[in-house]
Length: 330
Image (cartoon, rainbow, N blue to C red; front, side):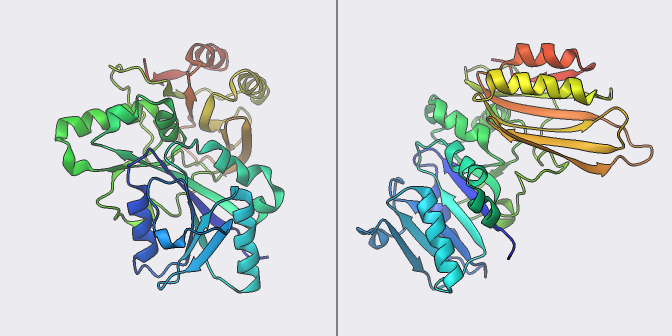
């Protein structure tokens, strides 16, 4: 069987620039065979003539990209694309899914973990969230907009030219408080280096915590965001049984609040790194490479949550080791 098709989920509040970015993806001469699933409820269609009465419409564009407009559930659209791919009707080797502006990206992400056949054919690569710099304060008053940022592996700020440096710096600080692991990039009129969108490997079980992970304390928040993040570090080896017991308890009590979480851990008596990560209650772990001789063995974990159970995380991990907490404060 061929390699799984990498999938990128594109999220962002209404008017943040998802459609502009999709137009760029679908029209640019980048030489990539990208399929895009566009939901009809997006704030503006890529191409209105693609909308019709069929539950799923698929069109191959001049540059070899494939546009799929859906009027039905995502799972059916994913299977239809596979059928047409397998039959030779269409060709693509990457998939981008646009979430609607008011949509929670979690159910879309979970689709690729829950359905066994889809899990074999598709590989979730990353969640990209666009943020409108000019209207961020208004958008971020909505919890769903904060959640879209919390789920992200990359944050793309649009309309940067419409705000001054101080406003952009304040926004960047706020985005970092919400999501400590997502790099922040500026996108100009939908154009950006595709390396920032594709090949993110945000859901791979590896020791990369994220290129934008902030290990520095951030200033106390001046606004109240329900979504926030905490980073934990310790150089004390962890007992795997105690760690497992606490993580199970944390997920049982707060799994629906934990939007994204990941850790690279030093386990007592083990020469390899232990990597874990999850989305809500979906959680996985694996052994990674060995620690190099002379390398500092340090455990680093990041949790991004809705109404972050910081006190419980502090208490639980304090019992596991001498952790240094770098938290977003409300």
